[in-house]
Image 1 (cartoon, rainbow, N blue to C red):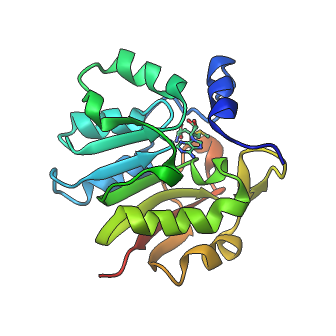
Image 2: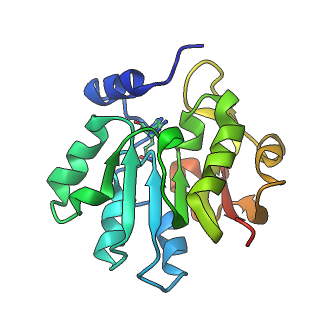
Image 3: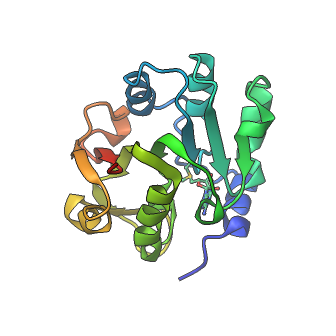
Length: 195
Ligand SMILES: C[S@@+](CC[C@H](N)C(=O)[O-])C[C@H]1O[C@@H](n2cnc3c(N)ncnc32)[C@H](O)[C@@H]1O
């Protein structure tokens, strides 16, 4: 299988092949972050793409929101749309090589973008990046999708083994806040790193 590296993603940005982009902040993610009711929490959005959630959360007062992406193209629209987003919170780099500690990590169409043989490494990296008691939350596709390039899909049964020995799987169920075209095809996850 092709390697889904910086070159691959940057070329998708440059050629406008960004069919994943919903054009606004995902309600499932933003609403979940708001339940923390604590603007000080440190949030990471890996594979942030156009960064609508980062923008929205920052505007809501969550000033410790960080957006990470491998491809420089991803950040152009966030910078142009919302110049108030702190430059230092926009991190250009590879998730698997990134270091930091966060209270909340938000997932949307990043897990499906990585090679499926990196799924265990994704779960382990999430553990490394979370504070004890920290949460990985967001949406995973509940559909088979593609086999040779992203988006790669799966189901609860397929995903569970990558996470269950590392996290408390607090919520792992059909999302009730999917955007209409994805309704019935997403799982909402709330996975907590044990203390
Ligand atoms: C399918 S897009 C989703 C973007 C965004 N989450 C959204 O929902 O619109 C996947 C994003 O992950 C980024 N990406 C892929 N592999 C990455 C990695 N190893 N580290 C950081 N970002 C990565 C890509 O550049 C791309 O912007």
